[in-house]
Length: 421
Ligand code: LLP
Image 1 (tube, rainbow, N blue to C red):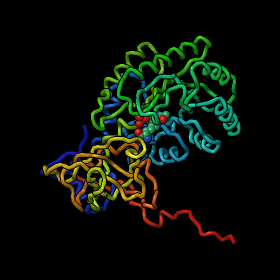
Image 2 (tube, protein in one colour):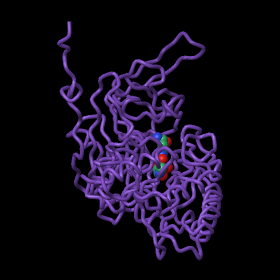
Image 3 (cartoon, helix red, strand yellow):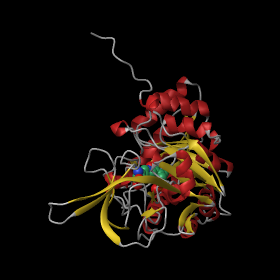
């Protein structure tokens, strides 16, 4: 359920006409609904009511500080994967004691920053990372709280690029080797074992892989206990899918219920790292049609709708072949045609939709690319020297820019003409 609906044939975000925002901000821009963000966070949270748990929003999904701040105010923490994300989470006012640091490639500098900040837990992904963390924590005269990220070798049945819990993926430590690492960590002076973590992938549409992974983690925790190692936190990662097209993902409450059943009798605090399920359907990308054209001469005539948003703004269609619903901002019942909706970037891979049935679309029309609130702006780039889009937040009948559209000067930030011969 989201708050992007037609009223009198015009698309609204809550009580703001999308057209009004376009008139004032220009296109393209990302538009987020506060009510939807809060509702999704709340819906996720309430599934775990009565259970000791902490929801750490996966910053990578949508990293604007205004949005992180909303979740922070609702009691949420953050799942980070870089020093930059730590910086953002702190700027957004997230309590460092609610920050979890995941990722296979943490640098010394990043470890130092996170230790200074006093984060809740590092999810360690390799033996070498453990050694480095011990060293860095010793240098700072502190102790790092750690969990190992277990790779449970479970197939999440999602796109290959976003599967992370298979043995062949780069993530985590295999279950068989993890015990040995916990034993090593136990003897390290500047390491404190506090948890076990696991994240098997993203955009999962079935509950079974989560349960399978959780069972393996539970089995592993039992092994640890036999060695006298207890853990306070069980981090199950993120991954709950959303509806882009015709997917049938589990309702967050059903997901929560399945986890609750599995965890009966366990004493740990459950940590969750949802990203997409919270923000995915809470944001859209609004773009203006620049041109339409028909290319003839091939097997069949090909209609193109050329918009002012491109793969640098929303890369998911190009990168994963992902489907995003695209609707006109002015509702239309005109004849539908099959079109490719493409951006201005000089690559054939720069498309938002291919062979999509769309009502007659004309120059100047506004289109809304739906479900763009997760891995949309956060994956955007300046490719083709395109300033990144503005981000706008709506609450009821008000809206506010939460990130200005970049200017040409921003494109050159930090760049210098050479003084070399
Ligand atoms: N925790 C960890 C350790 C992760 O690696 C991820 C996502 C999450 C949590 C959040 O997963 P979510 O709840 O959002 O599924 N760019 C891709 C998705 C990449 C996901 C990477 N990791 C896409 O646009 O589909």
